[in-house]
Image (cartoon, rainbow, N blue to C red):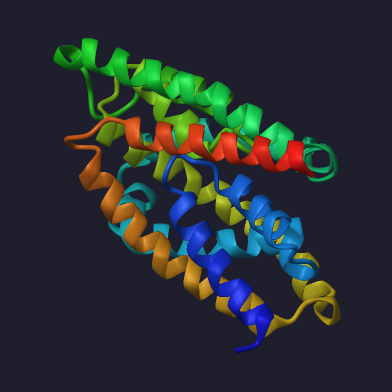
Length: 261
């Protein structure tokens, strides 16, 4: 098999799973090429964002009923989602170059993985203590808080889903409610980023193999669909512990490789 096609398949699966699991998809898309020595178009921010387009498809398939309802009738819910999405969207536009040129660094990723694992652990315990007065949907104030703290997820290793779900639980959302809201908020953000970065791929198509991009996007869409379904079911009865342990283990591996190299 063509090596670039195989790499795109691997990264598509990685993107689909890690976009929704709270382990940081951006970190994994940076780390896989770094660890295995992959270079070229798959080791670019533009390709990473193209893979996010695959997870956008997964989101739309899983939540199309909610989006139709919000766009046609439930405008209050739509406003709540947009309140949470707008701050991160603006921050991504303003800090785009810093993220691409400075923060795509294994040491930054390792530190972020560890620090925000403790945030997730505390959010889990907070949710357990406040289970009796938890709620399934956020207020507009909750949405604004979630949106502002979501900006931190621009740092690779933080995890957008992890920080939004944790913040949601701090506002007394149930785990499942926090996950569902996190997925809804991610839809316009991923859509906007995909369109913005997609210009680089289609505007400079000679620099990208479109068959490689297409394979990655399709693979990300399929794996993302199953990741969403699994996580919404899993969080009904489980805490974040397994993901936190994974983050700690990944950080340790990164640091060992970084010190060795």
